[in-house]
Image 1 (spheres, rainbow, N blue to C red):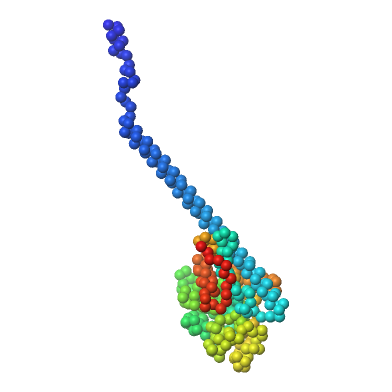
Image 2 (tube, one colour):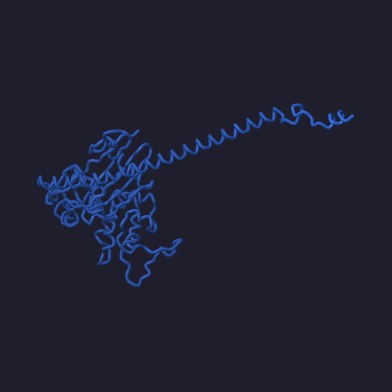
Length: 351
């Protein structure tokens, strides 16, 4: 009796218990864990690739920037050496036949880098800041030149008074707002010389199309005189109504000029007398435009500098920007076109 009661109260054999999980559930759990780990690994790999890609872009941007800076510095050396070479050979003039005028297109540097550069004589253009120097009132000779220039490039000269207001010093005590007071938000004109040509976008009535049409022919840093050895036909025609397209072309065909006296026979005494004080055969202010390329990354820099012997002074320095990059690349494409008379230095083509 006692024995039978003890047997009845004994715990069941563990091997005979059936409270183990269902094998199917365990398999699902394992697969879920494997899938979760796989997702985490893929996520990690994806993020790692993104970090590596961002690092590559940053590296390319940095290298492209320093390539562009190198092109600017190389431009300074070319300008100085070209000036000294001209002086030593007795060529006291600045012309497009000199080494500085040859652009560099896609010059290979290192394994994946390319640099491109172009030097432009700012004295080949009309200085927009001269519009603010009319001390005698009325329509100045400078204004008439800009009116001709605007008409030649298809821009309505009626916007010139707004530009004059922008670059003319504002008298003390004057609000100087004009049409700008009605802008949203209202602002004042600069009331003095502008330092960057892009500031013309703020002039009342100036459109992007008009700015693009004018930009190749105007500057803010020439110092006033136009170099007849580097000026375009449009700029030459703008100087005086007596300079027709045919005469402008004749001037270009006769380059380079070592002195202004040779122009007298082309222009005639009357026209020559009108512009003699407005033109020159030497230049001292240049813009250097450079693009550095690494892979698919490009960086652009534009600097304006003055040169005096072996001394150079940077007047403005502008970096990056899609607009600047597009402008410089367009100019470089124009320089490398078959129709251009200047043969660029081209030692490679970027991938």
